[in-house]
Amino acid sequence: AQSVTQPDIHITVSEGASLELRCNYSYGATPYLFWYVQSPGQGLQLLLKYFSGDTLVQGIKGFEAEFKRSQSSFNLRKPSVHWSDAAEYFCAVGSSGSARQLTFGSGTQLTVLP
Amino acid sequence: NAGVTQTPKFQVLKTGQSMTLQCAQDMNHEYMSWYRQDPGMGLRLIHYSVGAGITDQGEVPNGYNVSRSTTEDFPLRLLSAAPSQTSVYFCASSYSKWAGGLAGHEQYFGPGTRLTVT
Image 1 (cartoon, rainbow over the protein chains, first blue to last red):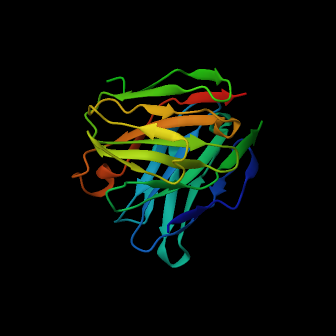
Image 2 (cartoon, rainbow over the protein chains, first blue to last red):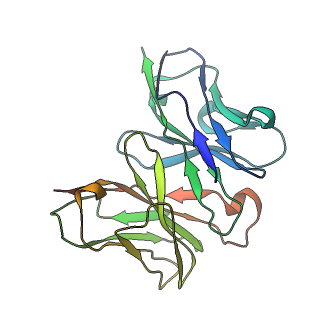
């Protein structure tokens, strides 16, 4: 069965600082990987996605993620955080079968200090 | 396109009551699904459908029913509400099951329904 671990429940960074959110997955084949962001009271917005090709993926809002097969990781990064980035971030792995099920991590809450 | 819409946005039920959460999409997506979100647990799949007339159970299906009579709509029914079903419910849809690669797996989420069962 597939699973996703986000080891950091809560991260606090200062505005302008760099950010890295960790994600480790468990999946038997090549995974479909996603990062979503959820602002308070809102739905989920897709930041970026990966299946194959270049292991460094660019997304929206200046985010990027790097796929490392050897470490089963798909960490999310941003060079300079803005106050509007404060939100909850979810990593997800998608199955290749007809179920198209997404398995989510438990999320990382990001707080941005002025 | 409105994308994925959900109604209502908020709902309070008493234990034992039944209700239907509505979900609709106007993107002609074949795949639709329901997730529930609970604090510290991410989102968990309740039921999904790969096309009209076809549904299947996800990770946490107990206490919920679904049907898919049209491509556009995928309602979620709570048969007899329990306090354990207090949660935020999200509906999602994605491209045709025949779409390969990432296009077939990217899911679009609705704004959610916040349900409280007392």
